[in-house]
Length: 516
Image (cartoon, rainbow, N blue to C red; front, side, top):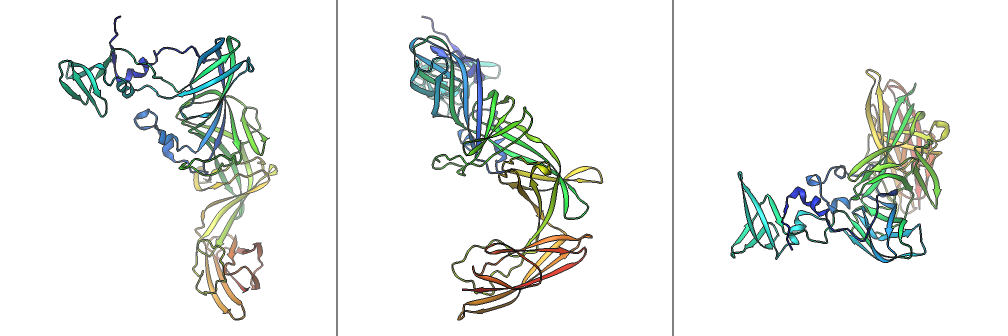
């Protein structure tokens, strides 16, 4: 029998390997795909390097793919040719990051008469290095280009680690670190060009079967991004918003999905976590809504929400796709809220009364700026909003350009709930907090503290400021004196709504008594 001599160039490896012998039966191209994506991404926290191509522009980097904070359930229907009795079926074009333990196979044509006895997942994809490794202890021919001359060396391959070491027919040993081509006597078996599921199938009915295959795969996720445009109102404390939203889908699962039916799951779906998982956060709710048939349609599903895109979409591998969540809402009433929290940092619950007079007397001068609006139909919204990053811009009337004024992340917000966005700190409105008096009597188990707060407004228009105070020294407290009205938010927090005149200042004071 004549033996073929195959010249192997690095760029020819995949082409030649595609000529491997076919299986007894292989999945056809007549298929339909459905994709349900779950996300564990924290809003705005998907690192930018996950969008970039892998080093060298190709290849499979498992550590990078495993960083994708999400997963998907793939449902694939195809026409298959089965033989009567027992035979092998090869199912190609599955995701490289498939979880083989989640695979389910069902013949829709003859479900009772078709059974899978065994399953193998083959992922040993062909590459130049793997071809070379298959020929250790066998004879190959290596070509080296020196200028315009091509030299050949034929010998038994002793090692392929870090280069090639060959033993010639005359016993000469050569170590080659570079080559322009390799000739193999034949193509070794067992190498594949695409990840493949191989089943040992028993079928009572021969011929065409419509089959459904489903499995889970890593390396795919989605998240929401919101773009808002703020238009100030007639006063400094109100305005209107245009709200637009997009869903971004990142696919690095090692497979593309052509004209797939797309679904997104919203809810805290419990999964058993593996040790050492990079993103060990619990499932994040994701939700989208769109009234048109070509957009997203929402419905209740178990204790979650299911959102189905009304048209098929294609998700190529190693790509990011954006799809509009809903048509932009115009003129949503919004309120600008200024909040002064004079205590730097946050304070927890102490096991004993805090009687040290110097504890918590530092002052923070920054006043935070928020935008607040209601997610309700009467305001032009009234749709479930998934957790995501929310960016706010404002139009500069001088030239009509959009200028960025801040961003925040929002949690999953059902309809008819309030959305609060922190944008930054006010420039022209400042606060100052100080302790004016402190008395304690540990024998009678009480202490009193007087707090004075000054708000200064350097704007040419009045502003409303909410002064937030934490009564952190002990759980039993009473406001015995106050210069302004206040509201109790919870067991340890009070708010003072204050209007500060244009170019003016307001001084606030209160006395709190703690007992134990």
